[in-house]
Image (cartoon, rainbow, N blue to C red; front, side, top):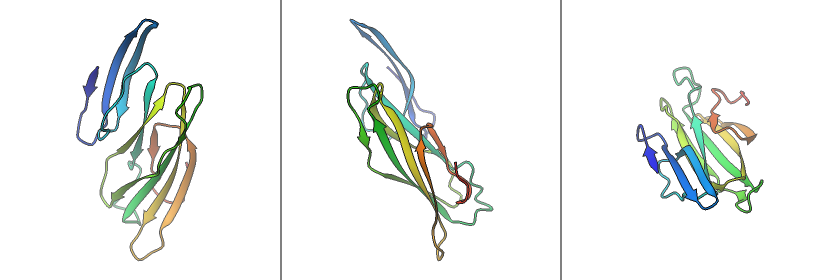
Length: 152
């Protein structure tokens, strides 16, 4: 098994080859949130890592001072024998001038399907928080819209 990390904010990336009596299983370049306490390597174990990117936000012209992203991931059983359910909601925040993606990893089983919902709160002190909600996403990257009126 090999691990690779480029900077402290980036996810770990591992690759593995598992030999078994029924044949080998290759797991190429699997990203893992760098705060994941441990991983299990098996022919059926997989991980879903979501990158949450603020790249579309231009803080120089933004009318808000911070953005909060609430993520709820749902794992459907699909063709796997187990491993379905709704994961606890996770919160990620960027304050004015903060850049760089954040990552969220959940364990799944081969054959599970993963989707997620995001609620994006655009916060301005002294004003009402503006929000946008996004449902049934399956991409491994969620790009935070630059304004609360932009839907994806």
